[in-house]
Image (cartoon, rainbow, N blue to C red; front, side):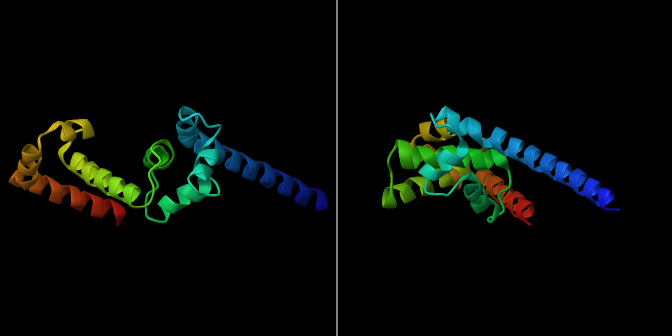
Length: 151
């Protein structure tokens, strides 16, 4: 009887190890390329440079706000690293840049333009686009999709 229980425990441990190992590999495949591209050894080191204990804590911050897409989290990791470490922004400058980038990203998501295309438009062309009925309709549709995806 004890041999059976030990055998079941060993099988359960092997299965648990396999599941954890698979999840760790998925985690590392999603985030390590960002860290390596920035000259760091792994994503945990990159998260520590941003003030987090490790990459799990950074990812959990996004998950707590409803973002589970590892690609979006990896993009945010690269973005945060660029702003804080590469550009050296902090405080008010960092907040101002982040707000601007979030605003431009929403416009780009709505219109399908790339950030460089949006920024290449003159100030008047940008204003005209934002006030156009077509953009307003696109923006409302975009906001509906975001609301449906977060619900």
